[in-house]
Length: 106
Image 1 (cartoon, rainbow, N blue to C red):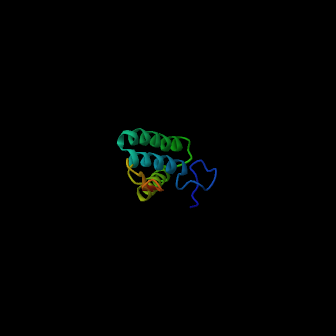
Image 2 (image 1 turned 135 degrees about the vertical axis):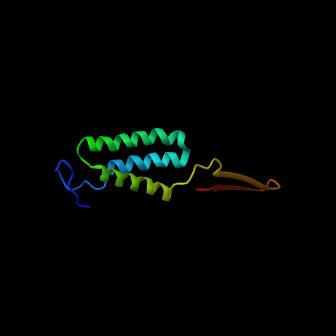
Image 3 (image 1 turned 90 degrees about the horizontal axis):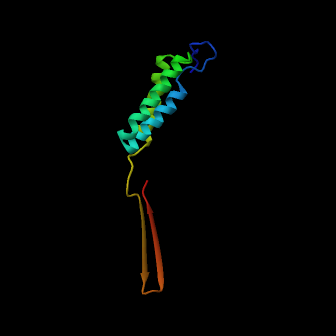
C-alpha cells in the first residue's frame, strides 16, 4: 500500500515489514514450543516495533498491521511441536528378505 512514512522518505510505510517478521518469529516460537520461548521473543518483537516508531519510519497503525500479519500467518501455518514424528521399522522373512519402513508425520 502506498502510504508515506512519517519521515517522508518514501511510500513504503504500511505495513511494517520488520515488525511483521519479528512478530511472526515470536508467535512461531510460542505456538511451536510454548510461552517459555514465546514471551522473550514477544518482548524482542515489541522492541522492534518501538524502534521503528522511534526511528520515525512507521506510526502505530503500521506496527499494529505488521504484527497482525505476522501473528496471523503463524496461526494459519504452524502446528505445536510433536515429540513423536518419526518412526523407523525393520522386518525380515526368515533371514532372506529385509524390509525397512520409514514414517514421518508433519
